[in-house]
Image (cartoon, rainbow, N blue to C red; front, side, top):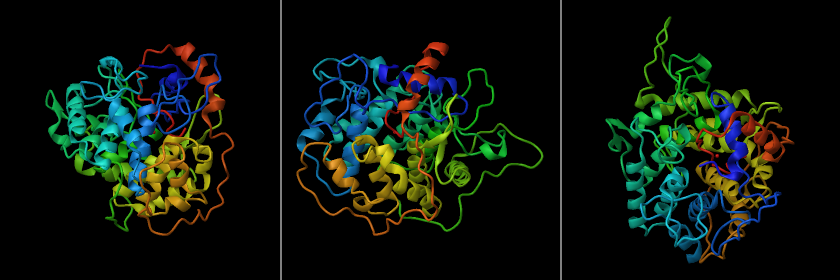
Length: 430
């Protein structure tokens, strides 16, 4: 369902379906319209209207704080579990948790991060099992998942579903519809040998209904890369290789439309992201019609997570340095719960100290956005939090706010018929 705060992002993504990174809705930003903002429930992290990203930001916050050795308040955990629907899915947010959910508007992205948070917290196996069953029931016949059930699948939602299944200990290869499993669904969106060389390994947001070629999307590639590498949140992989990710091997003199083999998917995605990061100053770029390209913070963060999971922290290091230096604009100096939690997860994955990341104590900032925790402890991170060596220019227009009128205009121009995987404060869908 395209809700009000996601309309601008929906329009932009629909207009750029074949190439642009998805952009964030304004969920954790105080509203400027006339509609009253929803009250902030007890136990919820973040101070902005939760209508469009309540579950998303809560789940990321709980995962990040648990990884940082903070024991969240019971009220914070109870709020997340209380949002779960009877069929096992989660909505983006429901103000009245006693009211029945509308199955059509349940949110696969929120469900995916909620499952991962509950696994990280421990002690919530029943809720996790129900979430897994929801994913099995809502899977499309091609193996993919949509943002809302019953719609065409997309790379972001499918990747997040794979993350959740892995976190829950369920092999995605065993979760199938009509003979197509979750990895088959993810492979639908990865560009292979038929694509131009510089696009290979990247992910499109959605395939074109008419089969027309599509360009890789930054956020789709970043988020799906974690699933392609066999990962989940939090990223705890310590295996590494000094070699760069291996680009997809394609036959000379002829392209093939064959899907990227499962065994090569993670490396191919890593090679694509490494090349894009190097080309764009160690961040991925958001290109919107009528506006100058700017950094895509969420896509960059997920790219770093995917590279670390794939065993390539060296190739992720430049992006992590860039996020340490420039991420304050994305997190609004630690007041955006989802963005701040994502940076905590990036810092932990990269073995940096989230309490001293780019000069900010992200753990303290995130903790302050919710109820007082039951206990705190030293985050399990080593010591390096050195900034990037290059003097990257701070993007003056990283906020989505300047694109909001443009997004509304585009929505009016193109209609709102596409159901898109819009991951609220993920940099600027995650």
